[in-house]
Image 1 (tube, rainbow, N blue to C red):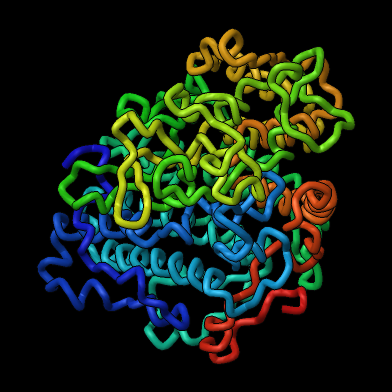
Image 2: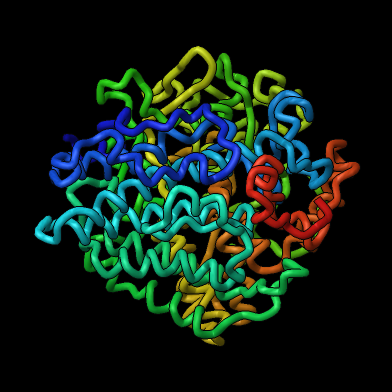
Length: 575
């Protein structure tokens, strides 16, 4: 088996059809699934058990979809980083409702679809955990494989909790089939829910090795990075059941973030920052699973599965200039403005009109041109595709602007863009846990703990790497007029604000922004300010309004509440 393709093999084993819409989580948490397919002898055979484990990995690729990407781009359209895109408001209307925070219904198909797909994944993981628990202790890899599966279970619960907040946790390996009918989505407080996720990751951290031959398997550093993220979310307490407001910030949780972001955990295993920021978003094999990639979804096109292991979940993002491109998830003008720099090479903090970025008169962070495709510049660094302010480059003819996301797309002439009957796919991995994110989580915890000098030093580490990330931008100054300019900070004041800005710039269009705003308790303020500014230039925001204590989280899907025997409680907000 090729090391990269751990998530590809045995894809059909225990396959639960992705198109099957279940009505409640008990419908697809089938404890007896492995025993119903394998004999007792097979269940105790390490070869077959590892097939069950690989099947659990595979579902995190086979269960996602262009409309329900586990990258969460479909739901990041709620942030100030991105427009929904497409041809009009009616093109993906349920995502338009999310974008303007209006008209969202508990019966909307996308609200239920993501719930179903993620619990589908958890069902496969729990089947593997049950099978591993039944293995004799003489199986040498038992603890390690259990660590891998608990990592996956934590990841699935993490995605669900960021979306819906109040979720049922499927963590008891001794539950009977009928017990699932009695699960509650409010059994645990918000803090207790985060701790359940952390518990799975604590176990994974204790048993996973520093490195893995199969790149799709998590390592100790993978677990540490996701643990740090869980404890960072947990630190911002939202335990008042009548509100989504942040009521306190917990010091012990912040100290946990510090513990799990210690440099030696990562560098001792060969992890670190890429020399060039752009290397994280390249499809060439020599760049995938690079030193900054702590754990990534492994996609491919050459393992004999008829392209089924491409990343199709980004298939809607290809611009309309590429025949068949749907032009979704477009960078916002607000995001582009955030990359502007001042005379000192620092983020421009001041008032300016909501207008297009003028590369010939304004300086900007180099990450702008590595994140956003801009008119009059090459698309994906290929001068054969010069971007223009025309309908060829904007399927909506400018309704959603003329910018294009670059991190998710590839050079159309590079041999990595795969066409199907409906969508585009690529074999490019999607990094789930990136070392730069780990550094910024550490910086945030340090800033919250009053250690601003250390926090700003980390921010400058990220900014200095950005300054070196210009290989793909050679000639952009002389050929296209780009004014690339970035410098590190020279003072430690307002450290937390510096960290927050750097998170936005470094992780732009990686679907972290909206969840960061909710975690910080800033969503209402930031998003409504964004709506007000956008309404002057974009009619889709004329009726937009973010309602605090409602729009921070998705509603619990109506189908799930109806099928829960009264055990699910709807989220607050008057859904």
